[in-house]
Length: 265
Length: 261
Image (cartoon, rainbow over all chains, first blue to last red; front, side, top):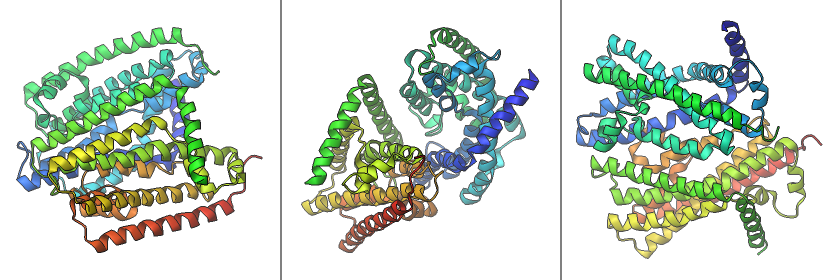
């Protein structure tokens, strides 16, 4: 099994390396919206002193860490898998004795991440020079705890995206649905603004959803803003969602593959 | 006359094409409404915590959202579909047929695909602009409205020209098919008045990829913030931009040697 992953890594790394010129464009997409929100909220906070307890500096810290959390927890399943169902090229992978999603697609995501991380790190360092975040509140415990949290976020996010992408077995095109899913993430993950500034009802719901694992929860862990009770609750909710997303993905996948008719191939 | 006839033919063809995907169209319109709801929710969260953003009130930001959506509509209904078709035609050489047709190639390449359902976004944008201006209580004099309209068009022309230059680069660098991504990536910055951004971001979105010229600037005109001299400068810039773009396009066409065939 290890050999299989090693070989898949070589193939997918080589594939991603081909597209390294596109890297700058991906990075741009990644950077623009956090920088916009950072600017909007710091401009409000510095005009008023603070927003609900958040100073301009707090917002800078939040969005600078958000950039990192987003790097680790996000995935590109919709981009590197949906088209295979659409044009039928999945057929070739289905006859192999390994799971297409949990091996090839997963490794492809990781290779993409490794490549983009290489470009992202220097950009992030330059941004810290520009925005001057104050990381004095960051603790070792927080950073250590955030690693399993982000891992959990990545796995849950990957399985949910994989399940939604697999709905293409029935609908062929799945991009609209994915756009809707994307909006849900935007609302509940803390990408737009720290969840504590969201309307109360959004906060209450977000607590029990997996999406805060993608951004808000690891960010606040790193910044040391959570109480012990909140930390435990976050991990418990995350583990429950890990179980649920495994079940959900398996359910959709098994039925989907039976439904698959290899359109266009 | 000639161009109007061509445009109406393009519209007809594109309506027929979109009728083939009716369900898709309905879903897309629903998604569009969802994003509008999200944008308004975002603004309401912001203005729960403040009364002004970069010196502008909520009404003005709603109007700005309207202007932003106008530009976004141009992006989604014309720029994206035509870029896709253009990149494809460079790869497989079908651009040859476009060049043979008896109409300016720049016009054919940039207007032959129009995503029809996006047009309803125009109505939505205008509603947002009118409602926003009303809420802000600004008195829009006829002169302000006129300069607003002129600057919206000139802002759109500036972005259109930049787009032409970007896709024309494909004639020199064949592997440059990510050409419009930079426009799309920075477009989001147009949702908010340019005054909220740090100076270096302001420089990028004003001079390098002039999103602000098409969003913040027209709204400033509507509020009566712009002097007559500045309005003239913006109008002149758009004319120069269009002229430069057509030169780059002509030079690019001259380099084109056809693919495959």
